[in-house]
Amino acid sequence: MNVKQTTPRVKNRQVVKPIIYGSYAQPLIQKSPQGHTHEWIVFVRGADGENISHYVKKVVFKLHESFEVPTRAIESDPFEVRESGWGEFEIAIKIHFADPAERSVTLYHGLQLYSKDDTQLVGRMPIRAEKYDEIIFNEPTEGMLRALEAAPTPPLNRPAEFGPDAEARELSRLQSIMQRVRDEFARTQAQLQATSQEVRRVQAEVMELESRY
Image 1 (spheres, rainbow, N blue to C red):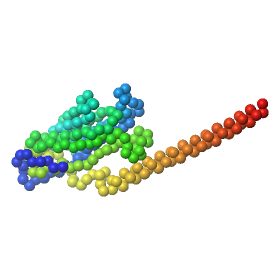
Image 2 (tube, helix red, strand yellow):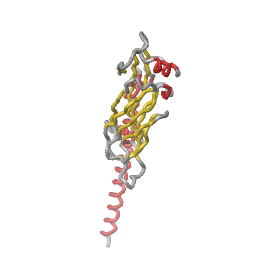
Image 3 (spheres, helix red, strand yellow):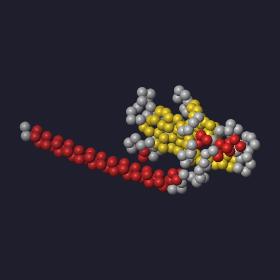
Image 4 (cartoon, rainbow, N blue to C red):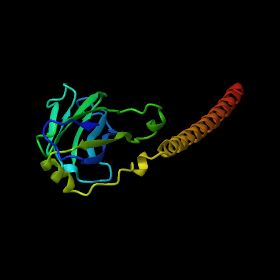
C-alpha cells in the first residue's frame, strides 16, 4: 500500500514498514449467556515485533454494528481489540500516523472463527488468520520521517513465517492434523466394533439362558 502525498515531502526518501494484521479466534468452552461461541482478538503489529507506536498515532477498528460500541480507537501499543461473539464479519482497520499530514491507511480483514478445511476443528485449536503487508512512505514529511526513524527499521525481507516455504510448512501441519484425526477415527471404529461384538455375545448368552427355562 502506498501512502499518498498531501503536503511537501522529503525528496528522494522512501521508508518501508512491514506489518502484520489479522485475528486469532478460540472456541469458548461453554456458550456465554449472549450465545457467544468464540473469543477473538483483531490486531495490527510490526512484522518483526517492532513497537509501531513510534509512527502510528492510533488504529481504529470498525466492528459489526451489532456490537454496543462498534468503533474502537486504540491509541497505544498493542493496537488490538479483544472481544467475543458467534459470527464472522469484515473489520475495517484504519491506521492514523504520527504526523497528521500523512493520509491514513485503511485495511480490511475478514474475522474468521471457523476453519475453512475442518482440520482445525479438533479440540479447541485456535483459528489463525493474518496477513503480511508493507506501508510504503514515499517522500514522507519531515515530521513523519523523524517518527519513522525513531524506531529501528527492520529488514525488508518478509518474516520467515511468511516466506516462500510457508505454504509447504502449513500443508505439512495440516496433513499431520488430518493423520491424527484419521488415527483417532480408526481407534474409535475399533472400539465400537469391539463393543458391538461384546453386546452380541452377551445377547446370545442371555437368549441361551432364556431357552433353558
